[in-house]
Image (cartoon, rainbow, N blue to C red; front, side, top):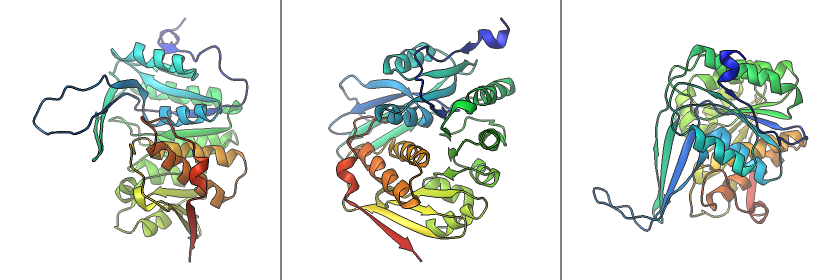
Length: 321
């Protein structure tokens, strides 16, 4: 056994037979959620036991798909003292995984949920070695032939290779597999230009990548770089879907939901990925993404959604001239 093989943690043996969604998470985390009545800055709080589980955007996408009875495989680098907890939690949830063990310590995130809103404390994550990046791509190459969709999502750790997301897109395209990217920064327009089937930035990521203050204009400029669809989530203002030729649609729920918005964008990504495999129209993809995103707000923790069917009828989709 080579040293690389020895450091690789294979996916669980009970992986589904159906073609899975590959969920690539380059900056995974242990997510800790506390739900309290009030957050008082500068004071001590005695709180109920927090909920802790494997997280990161790609893991949350896989969890939502798993909840909706879709097979998904988590691909991620894991290291440090949380390694065993991360693996145990995915195994307990029945989510197959292919993890590479790295020297860098996996980060932790903390969400403090109160009736007034949710406060998130997200560690940046640590850099991993160049060889580890190549091992991640090797796993994608190994799994892509049998995959329905490749999803690359989440924050990127320091020193991420500039072309990593584009490489994921190119691997998927070479295999004829749809690929959905949800990242920020300079990797986002590069992934679009490489031919991503769809991308799903939030408002902050969209402006960070493209500049400006108008989300529709920024989404149109981003979409024009490639051949896929830009889905831009706008928090309580809903979601945009924009094609390379500038045509656009806006979807919004007819009410503002109270709850934990952490993971709402990940639920939208899961919805888009599923809808793409079903050959859904763009408006159907947008409606499903908006419904699942809203349903995530009603769930206690990122990676879970309430029943989205009740919300589907409350979504209004408007074409933008």
